Image (cartoon, rainbow, N blue to C red; front, side, top):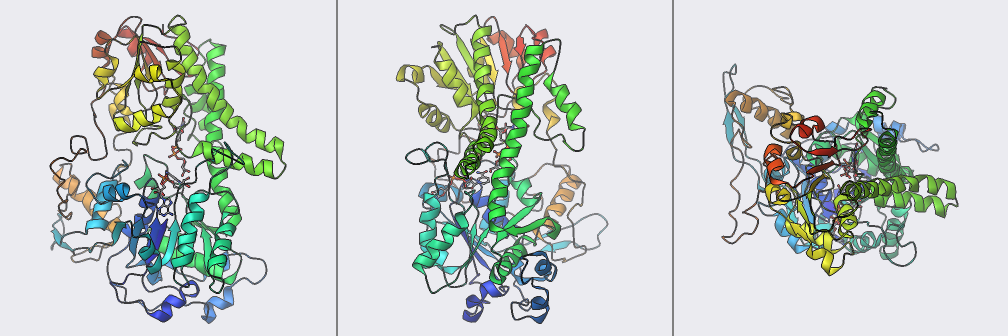
Length: 639
Ligand SMILES: NC(=O)c1ccc[n+]([C@@H]2O[C@H](COP(=O)([O-])OP(=O)(O)OC[C@H]3O[C@@H](n4cnc5c(N)ncnc54)[C@H](O)[C@@H]3O)[C@@H](O)[C@H]2O)c1
Ligand SMILES: O=c1ccn([C@@H]2O[C@H](COP(=O)(O)OP(=O)(O)O[C@H]3O[C@H](CO)[C@@H](O)[C@H](O)[C@H]3O)[C@@H](O)[C@H]2O)c(=O)[nH]1
């Protein structure tokens, strides 16, 4: 749960302003968030991270008493846009001086967020966290063409991770609830309904401790109607206090979290269709407007917002299942039909677009499956059984795709895995993350293990061995089967003596060294020099976005890669001597070395199969090295 609160440091919060937060713009804000991991923390700090750290001196914006705002408020039709247009979010002081408290019940996770080893791996995340959590140093930057150096003032820390849930909630102006909402595993709706008990629990704490006027933001992905449930709980505990509950679903994807947070396609805010609701939405919009163009901030009613999140995930997953269904057809048609060609061809149609058309072993992760189940459950509750079946078919195709993959492995190895070693390259549910939750690999390993192979060796360059093991132990294998699964710390150990290698995550390391395409994703987010360099001239008061532009430019001038080209970062607090994370990379990354397929060919056993579940290797090239290769949706087999 994220709880944004007014910054005490600024000294600008007066009791009267606090009492009217949901009716006027605050002069500075404090945000608290309960639940630190996954998306919740990046979400909470992001609001803060890109904001200027300078004390706010501008007067409070007009609130409900403002004639200009009143004049434009909608009365009957519930439309939000007139209110939006009457507000210039960039002038709102809420966009400045925000203190973000991220609170979680899980002490270990909080400790990790306060260390050099964050609990999740995301490109660029550690640096962003360090800037906000630890603050920065005074620094001066000289650039060619500028007569004077640009001076950057030290930034004070304004991101705090703790387990002080009650205190953070009590201080907050805006409280984000970002707790887990898994699929229920027992009782009514088991296997399909969302378990909102963590949201209920967090809301009870909020209800007991939030100050009057605090805005409660539902950030977790929830069933439609959850905002109403939150409102009911609040009313139960605080019948005499009114709180506004907003829906503000998160759309970031793992592996690209920092990029998605900095440059979101859209920010969705759902509010009640009331004056107080519109004003609360405007306050939240003002927070985002510090770094998101206002045209990308969409305001709707609460139910639409809750529903839109579930629909977005379901339709993304539906595209993957559609192309995977096509891949199955390509394989059966033969004649050289290639699903990647089909994706390329249809993706050129502007109405379809090229994204989410990568065929593979299916989608995994903690979101798609549970959100599809959630949407289908809602359809059933509404007695729309055909609609529910329609959505559930997306999951059926996904399951069939991964089962087909495992079946093909067994078939190509003459129908039996006994006495054979199978290498599994990739366990994370996607590349760029260390998240192992609901990975496709664990399901495929389960199917392969049922054939009692000599060994299933698993290697992932991003995941901790303990996380992989935990997932494998939770999939229902017998002790004899679990014994045969070995987690490896290098690709060499993994493929040594294997009859077949299955590529299940699209890590660029698996493409191979000699294949010359390792750089395919490198620099994909590179921006031209100077991008984001907003203010010019010595002493300019740059935003964090502007400073990033300056960093890019300095890095290019120095032509030396550095995480901290301006020398702003404060040194990390040293880890204890026995820190178990220091042996591996900062994000849990263990082995960044690319697979050398020439070497692998010498290490593997006949028949040297490569089952490319993500179509990442060059099949022709691998055949030349003596491999038999089978990809996804290739109507020809290179055996
Ligand atoms: N992970 C993502 O990429 C992502 C993206 C978009 C949306 N979401 C949604 O965000 C929500 C959270 O996802 P996640 O991946 O971060 O889940 P998670 O299970 O990794 O983390 C949830 C955290 O909430 C904490 N928590 C539970 N109850 C609490 C309470 N009362 N007070 C304080 N902390 C509490 C837990 O200790 C845990 O650390 C889910 O609804 C998910 O669907 C996640
Ligand atoms: O063309 C594609 C694209 C993705 N995938 C797979 O789909 C899964 C999910 O990928 P992705 O959507 O990129 O990652 P998530 O972190 O699960 O993000 C999804 O789920 C989040 C949680 O709700 C949302 O916020 C995001 O918008 C939504 O993309 C992974 O296994 C991918 O390998 C494919 O097989 N083919």
